[in-house]
Image (cartoon, rainbow, N blue to C red):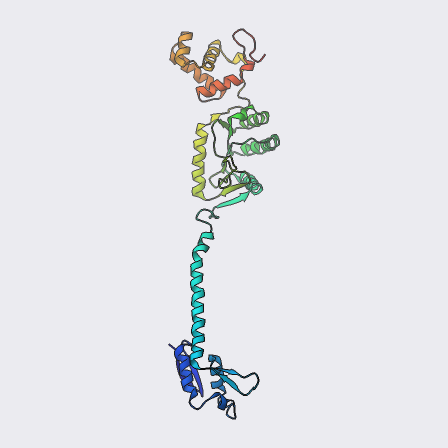
Length: 346
């Protein structure tokens, strides 16, 4: 606590300056023989330091109308003012404490703001990040594109993709199944697969992403959805955190394994001379929903023989399942002869 001492003719408040004990001590020390009236008189110089201290404590106030005179406040009044000031400060501090929960609520929750290695960017910046990443790629570029892409975009992309393939970059791309019916995507896939790239299609919904090497991934921002529940496409999330990129690589592989190979941009258009009569019968049986066993009985063959022919057809059409084989056959029937010798597309 504060105490008063006299040194060099002046009263000093030490410790908690202006505290109750300090003010009272100063008053008791100075009031004996040092009144404001006397100090302002002939002995003013003698008591200059004491007057200054009394003024600092608020006990005396200079009279603006009589320069050498002072107004004197009782110590109790001074103490009350000081107590009120302290209480006001405490009240302000308590109010600040009460406001902290509201402040915390206004801050981004965990995961909402930027984290090291994860940031949200606009559409244009995302495109620049991807282009820079592809130019610096060392081993692999994996993309999954569930949305339609304009012809101009694909025409510009083809030379970039084939250039990356020529420098040894492994290129994998997933498109939705309907891409097989879009000429500009067919042409792009033909150029890429002929250059050594791998393209697949997926009939069910899948996540849009770009994964480059094991150091960069760009994915859609699922915090900004359209009324249909899809990302609005105006923002993306750029990820360089190694653990997150590794997880996204695994997510991509899951999608890749479910997709059907598009081994040629033109579905390896099959000519009539590419298929034997037996293979044609097998394919027609598949398109009518006949099982392998049913096809075997109709052709007088074993199911093992049918299975061997099916594997040859998988390689020929560039597919990996009976369902995909049937779809590929339906898409190419226009160039295959029907049972009566005409062309089904005629």
